[in-house]
Length: 299
Image (cartoon, rainbow, N blue to C red; front, side, top):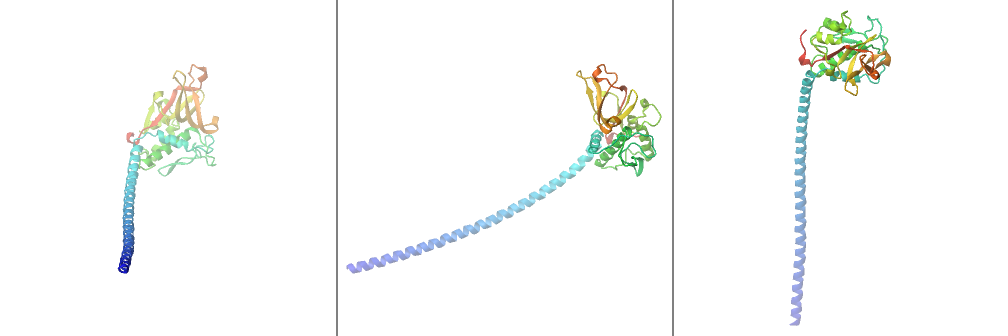
């Protein structure tokens, strides 16, 4: 009986061990299968996510490109409108800043056939209207230089406005030659009647003459007389005393006293304060401003 019980217990134990081992093996197989399934599922999810991200990125890139293209188009459209509605002053300031870093000596002579006081040849509608010094020195004198700055500023604004660069209020070659002679105060008439740069601007419907000193702005053109000489320049700002009175002004031009292109300050002759006593006649100061293109008048 004892032997039978031992035999029975041995068989039962063997069955239990075998079943347990089978269970462990089955469990491990199922676990591995689950892990493999989950791993595969994650791969699929990741690939799907990556594809979605790629598509989203592509869509975003496409949208950004469309937005940027629209922005460029709007900017170009706005630039044209801004240029057409802007006075010339900001363009004038931009042009005068381009002369930095170079040497532009002052030269005044009467060799009008070969030299008109500009640093480079100026052409309008294919015809040269102002000649630079043939020696290549980039010399200039005040009235020639201010005309050059005016001309370059007009071209730049026309370009931004989407217009022909050499179309100044439909002026012809003959109109431009007359304009230039008036700017140069070379028509033989008195400055008070328009034989100066402000008069030229008004004559051809491009702008106005500023009568009140307080209304002058940086980038205006000025023609003024001293006790024994005259000068033309680009106006920068007024100089005032401690009471706010206008006693002088800062300008940009070319002059013998600065050996060429430079900024300079001068004062009026009627100043009471000896510290601001100068040689400029306050009553012979002419200020010209070029209007926005949309405000041009026929002539």
